[in-house]
Length: 179
Figure (spheres, rainbow, N blue to C red):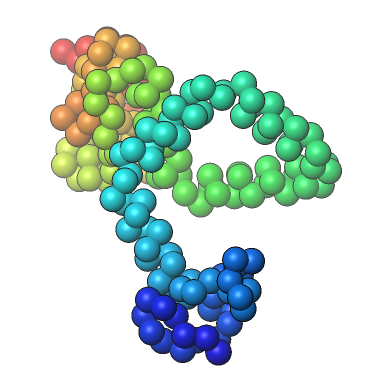
C-alpha cells in the first residue's frame, strides 16, 4: 500500500506507475491523479503542443517515413496480416470516424482556409436527408457531404459549406460550384 501525494488516498502499488527516481520504485502520484494532471497540462497547452507536433512531422517527414518502413519490415508476415486485419476491422466498425478523417485530411491537403470537425449525422439531420442538388431523399448510410464551394476552389470544410448530396449528383457536380 502507498498513499498518493495528490488525492491522499492509500492504494495498492499496482495503482502507481514505476519510477526509478523514487526510493520505493513507484511514482508519488497514483495513475488516476497522474492522468488527470497530464490531461489538464495538455489541454492548457494544446495549441502549442499540436503546433510542435506538426512542425516536427513537417521537419522530419523523411526520417519518420523511414522509421515506419523499417518498423513494418521487421514484422513477420503473420504480424503484418494481423495488423492489416485490425485496421480493416476498425474501418468496418467506425465508418463515420473514417469518413470524417478522410474529409479533414482532404481539406488540409487542399489548404482549406477553415477545417472544422464535422459530424455527418448533424448535417444529415439539418438538411432533412434530402440531396441539395436534386431534392430527392438520400439514405442515411449512403450519402456524400458535398462542399458547395469546392475545396480546390478555396472553399471551407465547415458546416456553412457542406450539404447532403446523393452519390450520383455529387459525382456529376465534381469540383464545380453548386448552382
